[in-house]
Length: 607
Image 1 (tube, helix red, strand yellow):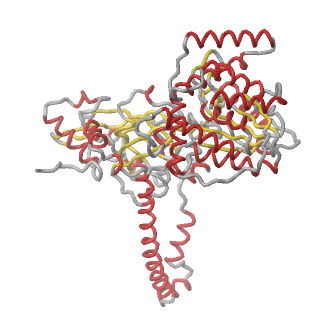
Image 2 (spheres, rainbow, N blue to C red; image 1 turned 30 degrees about the vertical axis):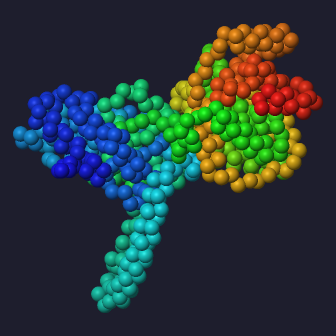
Image 3 (cartoon, rainbow, N blue to C red; image 1 turned 90 degrees about the vertical axis):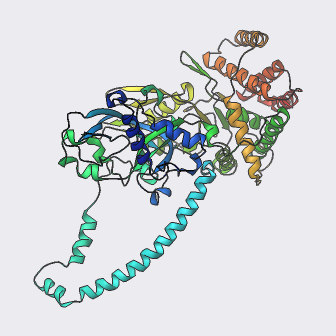
C-alpha cells in the first residue's frame, strides 16, 4: 500500500500546496478560493480527528518552543487577549504558467514579480496568551511527556554548549595573545573579539509590543483564515492548530519588498519579534471550556449514586479544610457550582459571590491558604489578589488601549469565563486611595455586582461581560466588594491537611465542571413555590431589592441542577429550595445565633 505524498505533521505546507495544485488541476479558478478553502482544511480535520493524530501534535509553551521546528504542525491553547485587525497578503499568484499559493505562510517560497494574475486575500490577526491563572494540573499527559523529552534535549544541549564554550575560550585566549592582535591594540584598534562582545550588548531587539507580564509566558500571534468575525471573540479560550513560523526574514526584508511582491504587512507587527512571539497560521480552531482541561472523566456513565458519592466526598473535604464549619462548606460548594446562566437587564442571574468574614491575618494564613490551595486543585483557572491600599493605588486592573503600539494592554481583571478570583482583604489597613485606587475599587465592585469589566480605550470606555467566581476573605463585611452572600467563618477545629488521591481529585473536578455546565428548566410547580416565597419575603422585608431577588433565583437554579443529578432518593426540590433560603438568611447575618440549627436543617434536607 502506497502512503500519502505528504506528512501533515512534519510538512503541513507540502500538504497545503499539494491540495492547492490538485484543485487547480481539476479546473478550479483561484478567484473562487477568495475567503474559501480548497480542501486543505478537510484534509487536516480528517488527519487530526478521524485518524486520531491530534495527541501527537506538540503544544506550544515556553519549553517546547525551544525544540519544535518551524513550518511544522503545532497546537496553541490560549485566550484571545487582543484583536489586531486584518492583514492583506498575496494569496495566489502565477509563476509563469503555474498557479501557486502563499496561504498559511509568512514568506513566499517562489519569486512573484508583478504578475497581474495575483489574488489578494485577507486574514485576521489575534494576539493570544496562555489562559490567565491556568494551573499546572491542566497540562495534558502528552504535554507533560513532551516537556520531559524537551528537558532531556536541553540537558544534552547544555553539555554540548559547555564543551563548545570551553574550546571557544581556549581559542580566544590563544587568539588574543597572538602578535597580530597585540599590534592592533598598539594601533588603537579593538580586537575582533571585543567588537563582537560590544555588539551583543548594544544589539537589543525591539520588544515594545510584549508587556512585562507576557515575557514570563509564551504569547502567540495567530493568523486566522476564512472565518466569520463573530466566531472568535475577545477573552474566549481556543485551541488553534496550524503551521508554526519563526521566520524573521519577513520583518527584515519588509523595506526591500514592494506591496505587490508579497502583501501588506501591518507596521505594528515590527514590534512583535518572532523570537518572542511565534506566529501560528491556523488551519483548525475549536473553542474550549472547562471540561476540555480535564484529563479524563472518572466514570463512563454518570450514575446518580456515583455522582452523589462524589458530591458527598467533596463536601467532606471542604468541611475539613474549613475547620468543620458546615455552613461555610455548603456555601462554598454552591459558590463553586455557580455561573452566569442569563442576563436580565443589568442583573447577572446565577452568579453567587461569597464573603467569609471573621478572618484575621493569622487565621487567613492557615484557613485562607488551605482554601486557596484547594480551589487551585479543583478549578483550572484561579487568581488571588491581596487587597491593600498600595495594591489598589498601583495595580492595573482594567485593560487599557495603547494607541502608540495599537495594543490592548492586559489588566488583572481580563479573565476567561469560568475563572475563580480570591480577594484577600485581611491585609487592608487604614490609608488614602488616590484616583487609581478609587477607580480600581469601582472596577472590583462592578465585577462583583454586574459581572462586567470596563475596558479603557482612552477616549471612551466599553463594558465587557464576564463570568468570574469571586471569593472574599475579610475580617468584617467587605464594603469595597459587597458579595451576594456574607457569612461569619466559625471553625470548630484546626484545618486538617490531607493528601487527596489523584483519582479523587479527578472525580471532584469532573463533578464541578459537569454540574456547572448542566442546562436547567423550571417546572411549573416549582415556579409557583419560588414566586410565593419571594412574595412572602418581599412582604416581610420591603428593603429587599433586585440583587436579593437575583440571589434567590440563583438558589433556585442551584437547587434545580443539584436535584437533577442526585439519585432516586433525592430530597424534594421544594424542601431543598427552602433550606437554601435558610442558608441565605444565616449568611446575610439575620439570625446568626441559629447557625447550628440551620446547619442541621441543611444536612437533613440534602443528605
